[in-house]
Image (tube, rainbow, N blue to C red; front, side, top):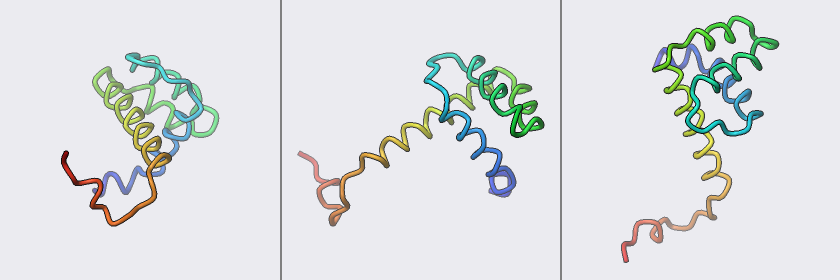
Length: 91
């Protein structure tokens, strides 16, 4: 968790930049480059670190952005919270 704490501002900057992009499905390398291009103006050092990601880490980045988008969509459409019983009933 210490690493996450150390880099949370960088992760937020990446998510903010990603929020301005149209979805780029199955294109981790293009997402990496697009994010680096956006970040170069506000944080050149972060842009270079993003651009230097290898293909595996670019895939992790793409998954992170996709998961963040999915979570944001879920939070935006979450129903009013009741007692929670409705969510756990089967059938």
